[in-house]
Length: 113
Length: 114
Image 1 (cartoon, helix red, strand yellow):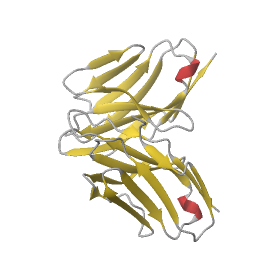
Image 2 (cartoon, chains in turn blue, brown; image 1 turned 180 degrees about the vertical axis):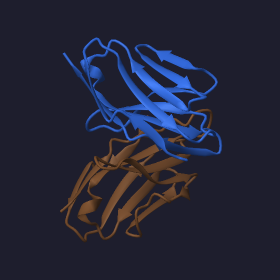
Image 3 (tube, rainbow over the protein chains, first blue to last red; image 1 turned 180 degrees about the horizontal axis):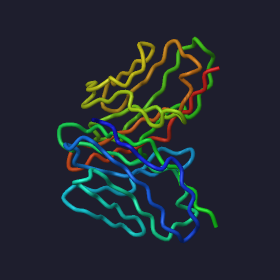
């Protein structure tokens, strides 16, 4: 029940295209859903996050779509750029009382010219 | 702030040797996490501390692994004896309890056990 399932494992998108990464969770107590971005040789860093009281959050070219009834959320990267090439992790947690993040397995995104 | 600091950045050791990884969290943060990352298993949470007290060590793979946090500004992850299958990148992260659970990751220690 603590798992977060992420797909696809890897993704190749042409420059200017839309990159979409999907995640699904089981634990309905989760109330915080962040996405982390990791470049080679670096630690993951928070990219964008959403709480379940909204269905969408947008920050620049990055958008999280959240479907509470389906227990799914996704990351959309619009106008994908070569600099977006990285590994992306979705995660979920319960904000108060449990600071642990449950991470998905990661998606390696490659943006080609 | 300098962010989460980890040392060493790279460690190469021989099987059977003791390995100690070090972490300095961001000042003021009250949670500290140790993760292991491999291609096969992804990002695994090993153990985490709140106010220097271990909260959940269920991810520690076996008794060869131990972690301590003697004070708010320092933590260690020790492997004794080390084995080749321990080769991985080990990350330390810290966070401040509150409205979000944003974790700030260090640069990682790449461990190679020969």
